[in-house]
Image (cartoon, rainbow over all chains, first blue to last red; front, side, top):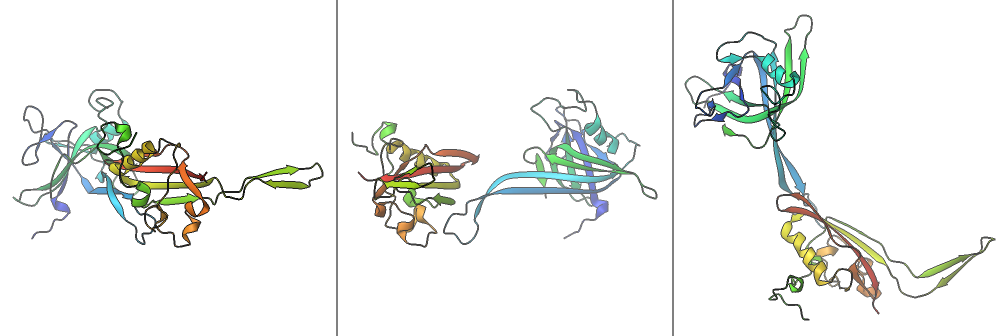
Length: 170
Length: 148
């Protein structure tokens, strides 16, 4: 059994309509790899929740419930970093999703039926092992940028995931 | 016309069990009913009351069944149709402590209607709210009236 540390974690960005292959690599309709590593991610968190439907009735002494709607969300803290590479990106692209012009091209909503703007992969990988990952279609629900004396500028971003996870391996 | 479970007419399809005897409500709210009293007040504030009957009437019972299956919700609709809405009166299984009585530990007379020579009828149609796949919340409003 192996443990994972921060050096094994990655947050990967892909376009809204990217589809994972059998290994979880996000690709476009032509089979080209379109996922890009977001640089300088300090931390990420993924949360999945299930609402409960109370079915406790008169005469019961203990609460009983049924499972209801399931939801997932995430957040990340990313250092403010503007350099890019051929296969990588940075927090400014995510910020552009939140602050950019709301048009039907590129950074904006593609249509009213598809509120999610991008695909995110929360990944843990060590060495040559097959990575563990969670892939979801996301929209940013809040974002803040922090700047302080003696600190590295960073952004805190919260996401909601639309629908069920596209693919996961845990 | 005799209702039969074999009838193909949806208005004649009855469930042999009353839903009020089978399912436990999530909430229950009821009143005791009142006597038919008419009050006359004189200009000096003096009051004269006339009692027109010696039986309780208008006992209200509101039941909520939260997050039940859609089949249970339909059972209540079937019962409402069987009673032809607020036309027919019905008993509520006053002899057992389950179903709509669940959780009531006081005397049965406190919650029932038959001992007071009343029977329940629907005050309005059942309200069904869908809450999830195969889950609905049903609200029932009944009123008890004297047996003629």
